[in-house]
Image 1 (cartoon, rainbow, N blue to C red):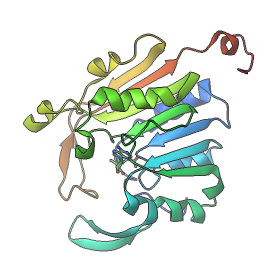
Image 2 (tube, rainbow, N blue to C red):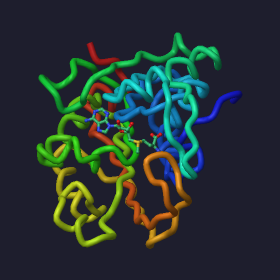
Image 3 (cartoon, protein in one colour):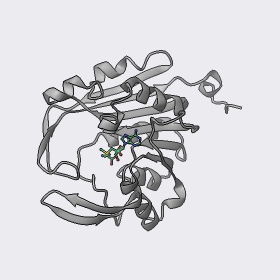
Image 4 (cartoon, helix red, strand yellow):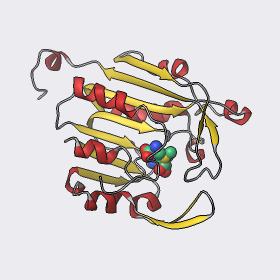
Length: 225
Ligand SMILES: C[S@@+](CC[C@H](N)C(=O)[O-])C[C@H]1O[C@@H](n2cnc3c(N)ncnc32)[C@H](O)[C@@H]1O
């Protein structure tokens, strides 16, 4: 890639999600990314051949603009749309500039959905975490894949907000027609200063990957009508 995401160097379980996609969905499947930001995951997914739906509420990370980086540096950041154009991936991605929790659930369906450290944002605290998860699940077709990496509580204030969750608590949302494929967690680790976090700081992260039960016709290899 010629361009880099502002989040390029933050820790991620994305390779585990990508490996699950390769096992379970078609090479040209549609993958939705909730909280797409400037495309840390959108670009590699599109470059790998997937059709991508990028859902993001923040106009700055989509269209670019002035940002402050650690060390009081101000710079112009490229947004997702410019990055897609520069990397010649724009025609593979549909950008949905919306708050995922606002209004009716999006009228979209996909073969897989991914989010990275999005639902703990304070803008989402006015709605239960279950609603965020449920809205993601509803977009996934039978046989499809759900992947989320998320912040776990570290500081006292995090324990008061259910959106800082754990693989164990999240599992309760995956009963019925969902199979949890993999959960992982880190210990506490130090992440270097990055956009939005001017100092080195401590995180703990979790991952949950799940698959939606296929319908009978899909399980038998027939196309849904
Ligand atoms: C921590 S950043 C993403 C960093 C991550 N490593 C990446 O590049 O995907 C999370 C993103 O989720 C977005 N986000 C959080 N809540 C959202 C919502 N309700 N609807 C749409 N986007 C949301 C934020 O605006 C932010 O750009």
